[in-house]
Length: 358
Ligand SMILES: [Zn+2]
Image 1 (tube, rainbow, N blue to C red):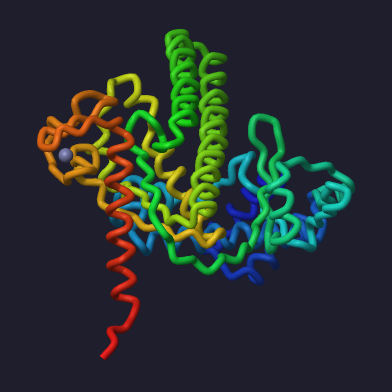
Image 2 (image 1 turned 60 degrees about the vertical axis):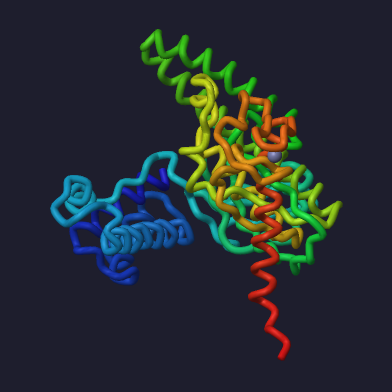
């Protein structure tokens, strides 16, 4: 209902050449109230619509929707902004209040205040919520379930001087080397999902399509959950051993990943990007130094003697150096290379940070 009201306000705004908030309020506030929205809710809808136009203008200006006259751009310019029924609803502290001791929220809806709505989250998230929640919360609905997305301002710890570096290999069969078990589990899950998807795709019915969409969302949630766990394991391990974390710069990863076909489908690049993000932000919070390194040759170079040869990688899992003869697990060899590059990058950075003594 709120998004329906937002669509109406959006149409008014568009007709009137997108006026300022106070001007827009003059034309819409009374009607919103008569539609049953409370004062707070009405204000919110108006602001949300105006903000959406500001964002659109910025995007147009930055050329994010193509050149003037392009189809995409014309589509955005010639019609009012539309809010999907499930679009996120932002709430500030006046409209939504949290009661942590009771585990509930009370929220202003179009029909007035609804109190004592129970919420659930993990113990870790609850602690963060209690200590750091700040600003607006978004209410969204997905697959019939309501989610509250709270904003938390978490301070970062001062990074320590790492004794060594842990190299995280995102690209090969294991999602993160040293944590192959977690990676393998994730792959197995994805493969199962993939088989199921193929079966559904053959069906081509409406209900099969709907199920597919739902599946892909739940798959993403599952992957995000796994990524959180892997990131946490890596960051905790780094913290425990006073190590830094070396991550591959993702820009080069697509070219480097050469996997058997089913795996190539299974390991989407967004999952890598997400894992990288998770590790980086968890590390920042814990004060674990993170460096990004060029992923070039990490799978072809020998971590013992430095020899680079594309034949060094004997198979998916085995590394045999053509120069010194060392035999190693391919993923482990690659992660050693990443760690070494990370150490070098950190040292170079430190030298440039510390002023030279005269
Ligand atoms: Zn070697």
